[in-house]
Image (tube, rainbow, N blue to C red; front, top):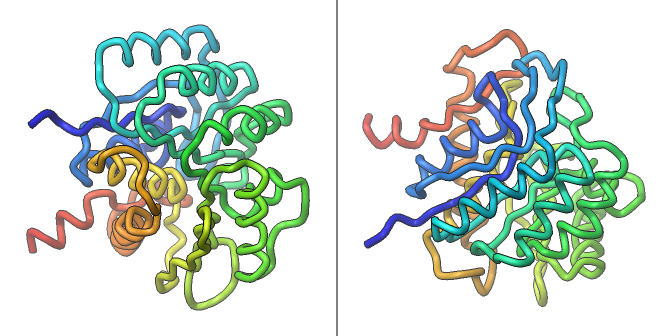
Length: 274
């Protein structure tokens, strides 16, 4: 049986906690063969982002087309796309080629607070990329930007915003609740016909670098093992969220960097081997 292939289209993180580095670790941990198309280089550490060098849109398109001419991709995840031209190029190729279910993580701001997406690219993500996706995974601030409103202040408001994003785009929405208060971290999954709450205990750690990248990549990896877009995203999201919970639980033991440290993407395998 051939390998199940997942693709990440994202930027690079030299510290290894986010971007394509985190995505490839996540794919491997969840049994998918990882491929990657690079959209940007970042000068980045656990302390923040000090520079971004964007790959020209034509070359991003070329990477995608050459890869998809050769490799059968079973699920795709997009992350940091940096500018409008790159976003449009990626959206065009995904629309033409449909490389499995598409999970869009609309990366706009790093955990450190550094802006990773300019204003024109936000419009391109909202109007061109999200409608091509099968699932979009904004956090609370990103959902507010996509809707042009204020961030949700609680789970009820988050559910309303997820449902509104679904209504506007026609794309299923997983609105991540990590920015909300409470003992539980509650994500809202809005898909046609149903809205679900996905709850996990909130873990007391400051080492959350790459959390959004990891969750979206985990969803893509699980989806790659299936046959096309699932009838419901809920089982896929639940498995991916369990993986993220384990990676967060192991984060403090890594001791990597002196800022907002990375997750332990191998933590599930460590537990299984213990």
